[in-house]
Image (cartoon, rainbow, N blue to C red; front, side):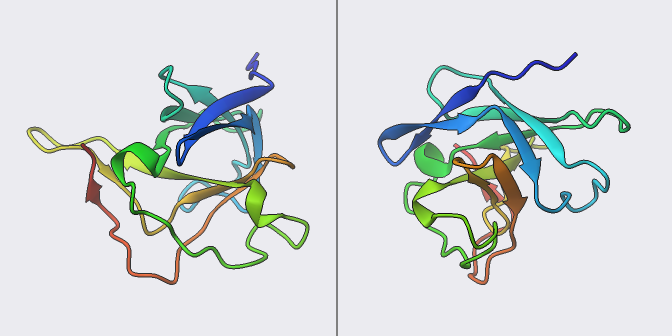
Length: 142
């Protein structure tokens, strides 16, 4: 049984915001069809590093690492298209996380700044959205 905390603290621009521990994706992540239910697990005490685990009962579990870009990319302020999480989403409730890929031998991990995971923390909805801006797909972390 996958038990998620009710909320998970996420560091965002000098503040800590509570984000639902259970998330429902509006659209499955690219390459992971059929997986729309996820749990957000904190992997540190600072609200920066998380595991995003799929918990759909009919699918094998998948785990991605995501970070709040606040610490590693303080100038990252993507423009989010209105309505990407639905018309009922208040922009003030959207939290941005980015997927991190482990580095190859001797290489640092990288973050996908082009397609962040957007979370409507009021409704527990999430989506990975490709931005209209020119952000790197593999930005070195650290």
